[in-house]
Image (cartoon, helix red, strand yellow):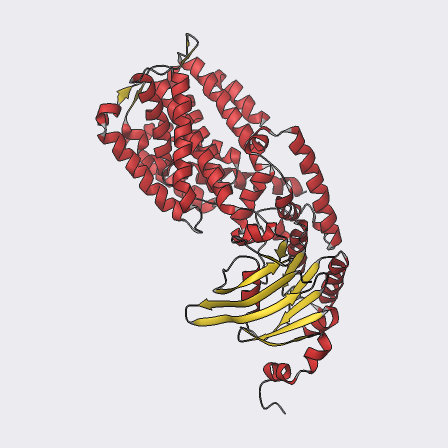
Length: 254
Length: 305
């Protein structure tokens, strides 16, 4: 039983193959990491899994059912959330509003109710605000709730993206380099946060260059190189795999 | 909100004659258009260069239905507003699926088409000579006189601002601001960006048409002058000048840029030079627009000891 299964996934950009005939499956409640050298196709894969790119070939199965979503918001509605390597914060809003926007899928709001400020809507807004504040506390940003998003330091923005993604209550959360650019103590916080997210029963897909973080939290690791699967297995098996060592350190390293 | 209502209620104390009322009504109508346009430009981050076209559909639609087909003016007005919103929906639906400023190009073309149709279909519109429009009447009561119109437009302006503030403060408004901030992140958060942009576009078109229809019935005579590309640009400038993503900014922008040319008539032939100078200085020293810049300044004053 898999939560997400990819079958023959490929993506071409003009003549360039970014992803080639990729098969993998992600088990529920696992931390599944994707690693590989720069340009291996990791972010391209996340973009396919969230509907930002359409694959050139291949199919995706969510809960053993063919995933028919096309636009990003349909992937979100199917239960897939993500964060971005190069931050995609709503800088025109407060930190709390960023997380509230993440709850969009769980809010019912007609145009008439919005224009007339219906009492039912006011109650729903209060609940949404409380839920968003809880999530900010969960990622350790309660101190910033009222602050404008553009006033937050870099490390806090990384966690704000995680809180916003969690607000949609995804079953599958894709984290694109959550530790990039963070100092060692911030990376330890992210490590703990990923474990806390997994403990909530959310399946995590982690794309990350920090090997210490990857090897510590992952149940399973997929190694990509030039868009193809180089190796897959648990952290220990992947770490010892000679092909992985070669791809990372270069041929003739011995 | 209360300040705006108070301003509308107290302004007549400063309005000495019918000419002053006329300008106040004009300010109110432009402000209504700008509050709607601000939803699109300031919040959804899309630019329309054809809103004078929707203003024109409201004006001519309502005028033609009332004058040529004998519809009750209130019904004609409602039909014209619905038609403008429907046209915006039909035009926006394919275009707003694309990312980027394609809407600006499409509305530029649409606005020009509408202005050409208005100028050439003289059987219906009277062509460049314009056409007369019956006054607004409901149940046998005819709305006449500058003062009556002032209160109607003032009330509608306050209502438009209230509705707009409500919308911005709702999950729909949050979705609009989110897709303006990052369309890709909005999509991943489950926000259907094309649908929300379309909503803002159709709503703003309907509001522009409402103001257009009111303007037609108020003046009793319309010409293609208000349906031009230049008027579309003036409307965008009012929103940007007042401050994007600021509802009160849109009102202030409309008020200043509608009233300023009237005040500048003392400069006679240099009027447009002074007008352009005011615009340039504002944009250089207040790039975020009048109201947001002044609000930030006031906030800083308050924090400083």
